Image (cartoon, rainbow, N blue to C red; front, top):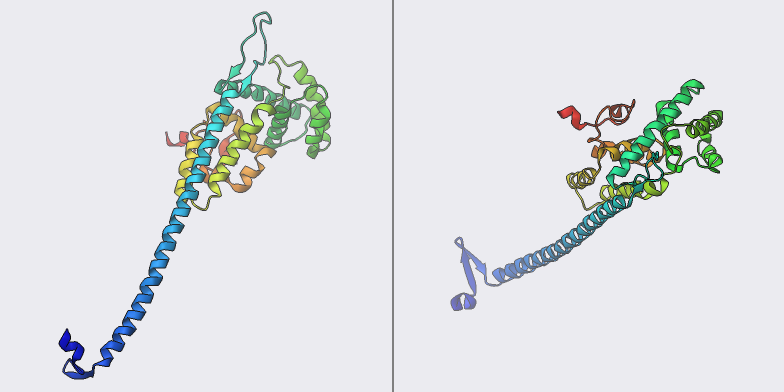
Length: 284
């Protein structure tokens, strides 16, 4: 090393090179490589910080999603629905609670849809299946108690004169219906219930930190929480005006959200007609 330092010229591949050339070359290489390594180090640090930030944001979204699932379960536990008919007023039947409440809700909507369909046929109103579902879900949601007729008329005004005929005949039909209190409201139970489900899916779907397969995984977890009566009510809710945002964002098709809905379970409505997804019964 001492000899090289004090040598005035170097011999490289049989050629004489001035002693200052290797030094200049070394300074050039050192400066260039050092700069590149410094930039790479900074990029690596930035990438690490960015990765940690993304992971933190991703975990925050997932935690929020599971909190919404907890709220869904707590909300479901709090739902209490009185029976449609009371056979013995002296010994009243206890209300249906939790998932069993949706059995009562399903029965109520079933008979309500029958009455709406019958009026449509008898009065030749020529409403489509989707419109009948919409009319039924509006009455099912808001109710038709005393003082609510004008409110329902306003909600159904999109159907013109048919709305007046429908409401007037439905009021009479429900008053004399043997199946019980079909005109009672359910918005207290269902408003936050459906809103929370929609917002949970929206939270996952709009996340820029989750991959598509991860989004499907989390929505499947939510999907698995719903019983068949819940899916029944949800199906008709989606057919109505209340399902507009779901349809616009294509959540049903994108995440096959109704795949667990049993076929021929939704009265005379075939889910395949409205939502082109694979249903579990097709795989059996």
